[in-house]
Amino acid sequence: MRDGGVIRGRLVLDDRVQPGRVVVEDGWIAAVEADPSAASGSWILPGFVDVHVHGWGGHNAMHSATSLDGMARALLHRGVTSFLPTAVTAPLDDLRAFADRVRAWMPGAPEDGAAPLGFNLEGPFVSPQRVGAQNPAFVRAAAEIAFAELEPIVDGFRLTTIAPETPGAIELIRWLTKRGVVVSLGHSVATAAEAHAGYEAGARSTTHLFNAMSGIHQHTPGLAAVALARDDVYTELIADGHHVDRELWPLILRTKPADRLVFVSDGVDLAGTPQERGSLGGLEVQVQGDRCTLVSNGALAGSVIALDTSVRNLALFGLDMPRVAAAASANPLALIGVTDRGRIAAGLRADLVELDDAFNVRRVMRAGRWYSGPAVASPAA
Image (cartoon, rainbow, N blue to C red; front, side):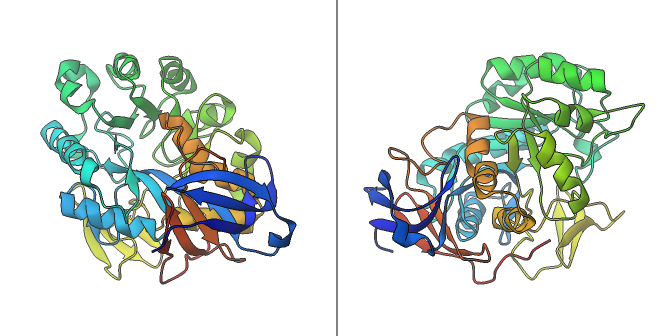
């Protein structure tokens, strides 16, 4: 694909939609200019960033460098220009091996795929009472280990999920935060007080809001209630219409500040394939329509969407486009401290997504080069 040059359309900027043009030079945005003649053009958004995705297109993040290649390429066609390969709860030796594999792979990651920004570990320090689709055999309490065992994982370790009420969790949150790892609270039965304690210890985000966590009750509010009430913490939203019912979307959108909502896919390797059976962390899963569930009990087990589905769903829902773009790009990057991309502004990486009037991905620009969108448009919730 040739270099981008000049891109015209409805530019989704930080605080407005502006008909204009983006000038791209050597993979970077050189200028952003108003252009009234582009008012009927395509939507132009920053490239999407998925900080919680286990696999895509038949490729599992935990399997091999070849799988990571395939996953990155599959995600790029869905508009995802940067991502965190995400591990499920597993033995510590397996998680150390995953960390080593991702770090070794990153320097040679394919240019025609989403760019890796490090990695995410969803566990193993979660509540055995809210494992969700995690394998309970591998759940650990932080109090059971010497934190020095985690030192080999820290390099490139961007994000992790911890249940704050479990033994040793608060100490681990403090330990990881001092080392630059962002902690997200989730897979938890925390009371409101325990949730506040986790955030006060340094946790900054909330893993797939409402799912696998204590919720909202008028007498016994839990983690979900605290996450919504606190303006200082991020919350992940899987906007497939299954993980969080559409009736709750207005509650989330009215309570969370615009810069604290993060779209994630929680995608699994069955996503984007015709396969109906597979495994996740050693547990058998099945896909029925656009839902992925555990065979054993029917619980949701990740998703089969990418972030283009979340963007399309919330745009069709009526959320203003700057907020949609922020949740898919700028906010996840701010969460993990990446500042060179995620907005349409001069001096940033030319990672862009072009959408049609129905909010389907037409094409994707990564570092100034265009790639095709998906062969099949995203389903709406």
